[in-house]
Image (cartoon, rainbow, N blue to C red):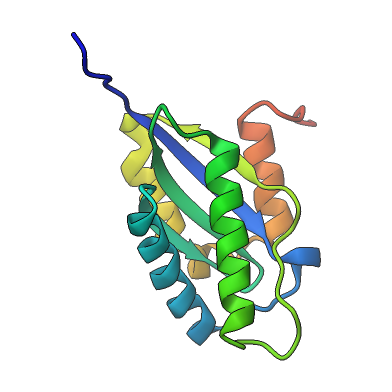
Length: 146
C-alpha cells in the first residue's frame, strides 16, 4: 500500500489581542470568507469557521504533512495582515500569541460544526474566558474544581 490514509480533525480557537472586541459583523463576514479562501489556495481544508467579537473558531481537517502549529500560524498571520491591509479598523489588528487546538473524533464532527456555527447564541450565555476554561477542563488540561 503506497497511499497514506488519514483523518485528523482539529478544532482551533484563538482570540484577538487582549480579547479586544474588534470583529464587527461586516469584518466577521469578510474574514470568514477570506480564511476559507486562503485555506483553499494553500491546501488547508477548513470545514467550518465562525466567531464572536473577540475570537474565532475553525474546524480543520489536517493532512499528515501539516502540523497544528503550522496551520494556526499561517492562518493567524495571513488573516491579521489581510485585515490591516484592507483597513477594516482604525487601529492595528492582531491575534493573541497563543491558540487552543483540540482533536475531534469523526463521531463529534456534526456537534462541533453546530457549536462553531452557533457562536452568537452561545456567547449570550458564556464569555470567551468561560468558554476556554470549559474546553480546558473537558480535555483534562486543568483540573475540575468541585
